[in-house]
Amino acid sequence: MDFTPILAAIFLTIAAWFAWRYFKLRRDVDEYASRLRGQNLETDIKELENLSSAIASIVALRNTEYAALDAERARLAAVLEQMTDGVLIADAQGIIQFANPAAGRLFQTSQPLHRRITEIIRHHQLVEAWRRCQQTRQLQSETVEVPTRHQYLQLVVVPDQNSSGTLLLAQDLTRIRRLETVRRDFISNLSHELRTPLASLKALTETLQDGALDDPPAARRFIDQIQIEVDALSQMVTELLELSRIESGRLSLDLQPVSPSDLLTSACKRMKLQAERAGLTLRVECPQDLPRVMVDSQRLEQVLVNLIHNAVKFTKPGGEVVLGGEAGPGEVRFAVRDTGIGIPADEIPRIFERFYRVEKSRAGSGTGLGLSIARHIVEAHKGKIWAESMEGQGSTFYFTIPL
Ligand code: ADP
Image 1 (cartoon, helix red, strand yellow):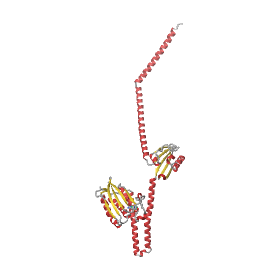
Image 2 (cartoon, protein in one colour):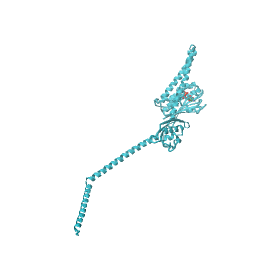
Image 3 (cartoon, protein in one colour):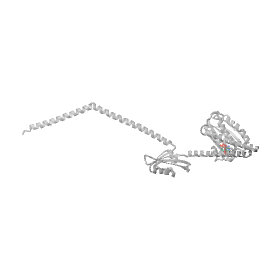
Image 4 (spheres, helix red, strand yellow):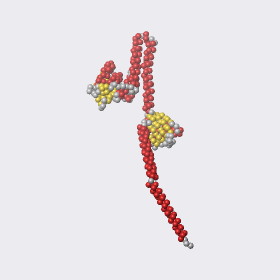
């Protein structure tokens, strides 16, 4: 049998298949090449560029967001750092996870972090408030006095909404409580001070009504006594008004340059007669050439008069009151020295308080407001006032006026 035609046919078929594969490959390569060369590649590059700029703007946006978050965090940290109220964050087990410096100060601990709340707040009522908040998940508030630290503390415990822990806010109420006490004492002192002259006025008028009016010499005595009581009352009211004006910051000073020696001489002149009547010598010991001070001379004279008035009142006849002035570093220091009965050492810090009198019996008349007014006026001039005294030997009241 002749296989030649068959072989030829097979050969031809194979050749045709190869030729077809070859042409198909060429066509694909051409197509690919033309795509590479043509518009499609540009589109891809554009897409890539778009994508990259979109990524860049996302990165930039994120960076801005992170910077804003950082600034916010720094601001919050500064607020927590500077706050006078204590802030603590505790987890569900009561372990402290955050504490600002004020919390450390209020609870007198240098390292509250990672310690138990019971170790830090050390007051059973406050710990109880925290426990109640943990159990009920409701805000709790508690105010306690810590006698060992002479402190009033308020603790507010708030459940943390994002975890099972708590946020604790601690506030020192000591100053507010002290002010409340001062106000209460002031009112009770004032009522007490008013009651005595009013009772005496009532008694005097009743005695007059009950017949003393018909006895002219007695009536005159009673009326003189009424006059004294009314004067004392009006003096107290004037001083109270003055004090309230000064304390509420409504004291306007008319500052003028004044020579310290002139100030002392003028106050001395005003009080001379009173001192002589009490059998005392009153003199000024002050160099003429001291630098001038910027003061409201009327007000400062009032300070000196109040101090001299006390010196005269608390010095026995034969004694001496000396008004001094000397230059100090950046200030002039004034002094009113007497040889009087003196003030007990433990009372000295209190004599500048309103209504404070060392021993009511020894003072005779007086409201206990004079030194309080003097202190306010001196402080309004940015100066300081204090007293030094030895019981039985005398007292010196100093005050400074900055230059
Ligand atoms: P008062 O109107 O009672 O004098 P002050 O405020 O002026 O009130 O004084 C308060 C208290 O300080 C006086 O009651 C007195 O006990 C005491 N004191 C003030 N100055 C002197 C002084 N020079 N010597 C002794 N005690 C004084």
